[in-house]
Image 1 (spheres, helix red, strand yellow):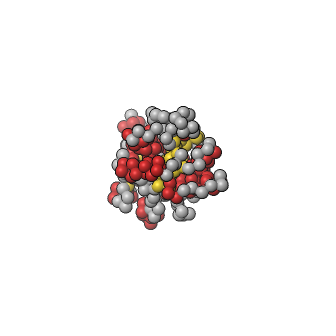
Image 2 (cartoon, helix red, strand yellow):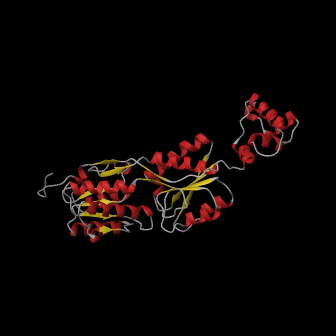
Length: 339
């Protein structure tokens, strides 16, 4: 019976209005304490659980969280976003919320604007930060609760990130210590904040080792197969010992291109990735990479957002912890064909 009970049923049974029942459920509004306790006692006795719609009406909430995804082709298939959303889902399920996905493609915020303007969600999690981020500017202007996954120069927003700076710096340092002195860095879109962070980490690791990276071997904006091919050829022409890739997708693309060109890994050149994932698990040879806990990142982002929705002031943070797996792809060759 409780599963079929509605606010109308409770109001009729107690001889009060639906508004009175809603106020008793939400704890808001002007009703006597005696009436509030009467409604709550009836609810408890009949094991009534309000539906999400009823709770939303009573508490002025939608019980939805919006998670944005970047609109680059194929990006939703990347392990980072899948695992991050899984972490968010752990928290939303516990809170009785559902997840809405919205794709943000460059400057096109149409989907996000529709969700915010029509109040379809109570808060937003941005899964990527950009330089001059239009989504951030829009949400700030609207005063809409949101948490950004990634770093930002804006001190007024709540950001949550993995320790990408330290992870990439440690990876680069280990490669330099292994004897690889000519490292190349290949990265993607320069409007993504993470690209700048990993570039900075690469440079800092060199300086800590008393070296300066070769600017001709720092290649950014590698966004398609043609640019991957040009980047790989430049690294070989300039006698790089190893290519440090900014992402798992780039590392996989470069490995495939090297195989097509007959370039041996690591005999001719090494490959490492600043971000490791399941995309690289079947790679041959296995790729030296930095591994983070994306589930924990998504869960923490959701927890911070719920605290904001509840009216609490929260601060962003960097989640510590990562693992560097040194694999065959960066074993120093003797240049005579052996390892």
